[in-house]
Length: 226
Ligand code: FES
Image (cartoon, rainbow, N blue to C red; front, side, top):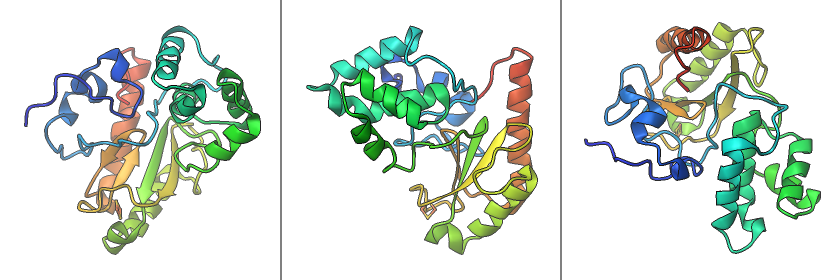
């Protein structure tokens, strides 16, 4: 399979950067199903989530301001830009607090109540801080029949967390997810914006080690793989 030359707008907000699939996901994630996980289909709907988050970052400045301004121009009225703007805010800050919802309301000339009503409706907006890697384990029917509960327990055990908690090292949060639309490849796990499919309990330590390696590569200036 030949990967598309241009990112077709994956995750909704990165198309304007004209990034290639390779630039977004890394070579090993494009055009094949790597054994280590990370299906090229990834998530089309979940806001792009980075390992690096800054809960105190300004909404918006620099490249993010440029992106916000482009998002607003796509719609006939500002209100219609609410979902991608919330996604962008989450990409910057890692989660969408009530204060962030209020800031977004101001940016889009909406009432706080309206924005809070929308943001709290969607589970893909994190309402509380998450670790550098948010691990979402699908426990819906297909995955459940194939051992998803055990996979979930393995992630919780290996990260020494309870559901939704941030691990002591700040690296991981593990949550249960409803169907991630990868039902043909259970158990499906989404980590930040990437899919890991056919995950079994035995895969869990390797996946976590790989994520830890990503973070240590980043601390050595090699760049983090998101
Ligand atoms: S049931 Fe797990 S991805 Fe659909």
